[in-house]
Every structure is written in structure tokens, then in C-alpha cells.
Length: 181
Image (tube, helix red, strand yellow):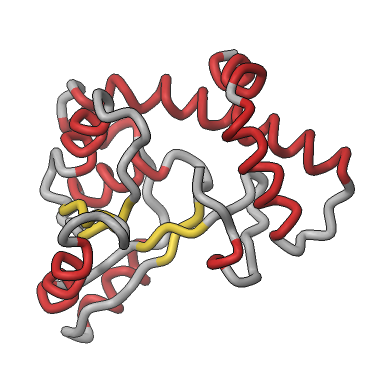
């Protein structure tokens, strides 16, 4: 419900989401774009309600709640002794996944855009770095280039975020054509 309220009142982000969906080359009709945009907002609202308590949950409770699959791929890449990049979409609860990975001994650096709300940003940064993950400001933020370059030498993994589809279809086109919220 929270996300649907945001969808109704946040015209700027609603326009950004719709425009990004139109540019994504998914072949969606305008009705599908509007429906999917509403689903995106609903997902973000639900994810927010799931994520906020993770600021204070015990590590063991987070481990119990987060199920990780496919870690053999991570481990195989790490075993090569070189850094690697993990690309993720905004699918599922990526914040919980990041906590689960760091709690499983797979801490990493994540590139992310700061929130528009400066009062909430410190809480998100605290969440993301709670169990050893490092937050690198997205390009355009002060010091972002130096931070990303430094992280590349520290390894092993550098998850990078890419816009995605809440039903699992990911954007296959040029992400530079997408707008930021």
C-alpha cells in the first residue's frame, strides 16, 4: 500500500519510471508501461517495509530470513584470485541480499546513488555497510572516481546496479539512455 500511495503522489518519479520503461526496448504498450510502473512502486514500498527493520535485526535473524542461491558462481570467480564485477537488477530485495552476502563472508563494494532525501541517506549507508560492505558513491558524487578505482584493486566483487524489471526481465539496451529518479 505504501508504494501505491507514493505512485499516486510522486509525479516526478512516476514520470521517470514510465519514461525508463518506454526506453527499455521491452516492447510494452502504454497500458503495460503504466501497469508495470505501478507494480514497481508497489514493490519498492514493500521492500522498504521489509528493509528498515534490518538496520537493527541480529545477524542470525537476517541469515534466517535471506536465502542465497548460486553462491558457487561467486566462489568460483573469487577462487581465480582476480576481482570481478557482479551486475544486479533492481529485482527482489537487493539490500537484504547484500546483507546476506556479507554475513556469509562475501563482503563487497557496491556502487550506488545517494538518496534524494539527505535525512534518510545516512541510514541507508549504515544499512549497506553494516556487515562489512563498502559503499562507493555513484559517478558524479565527490570522490566517486577515486573510490571506485581504489575498490577495483581491493576485490573481489564489485556489484553494479542496473535497472531491471520486477518480473525478472532485465533491461538489455543501453543503460545510459535511462533517467535517474
